[in-house]
Image (cartoon, rainbow, N blue to C red; front, top):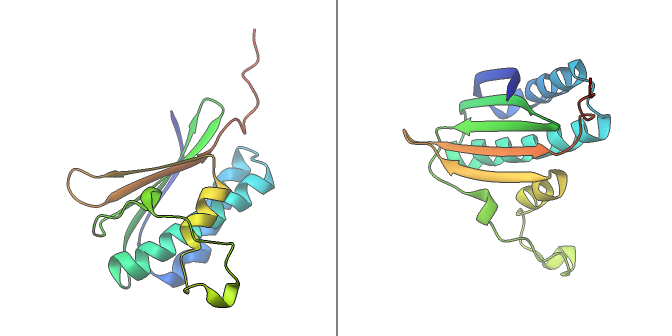
Length: 144
């Protein structure tokens, strides 16, 4: 795996535009399709918003690492918030009328729709690591 970029910060909601800019700039260096960049920014925005609001209840340390693994682009998001595995979060019932649904609950659902890979692991020293990615977005290696 090749690390394309990393960002560490004591994040607040105000930092979401900086985080999206980091992902967009990193992806532009390796010429990722703009639709994939949009999807990744949507997923990261939803996950970090949830971490800040519900995990930390405000600001907290966030680490983002962007990696290339063969033809796939992966993002690892790490935090020190209490344990939470969003991959086990039940999907919302989107068949109900909007006015009948409880508020919230769409962020993890949108994340699932936006990425091809989505996993969670608890870090050994506390915190969470969420891995998400888009598969086969890089062209195949040319044979020599």
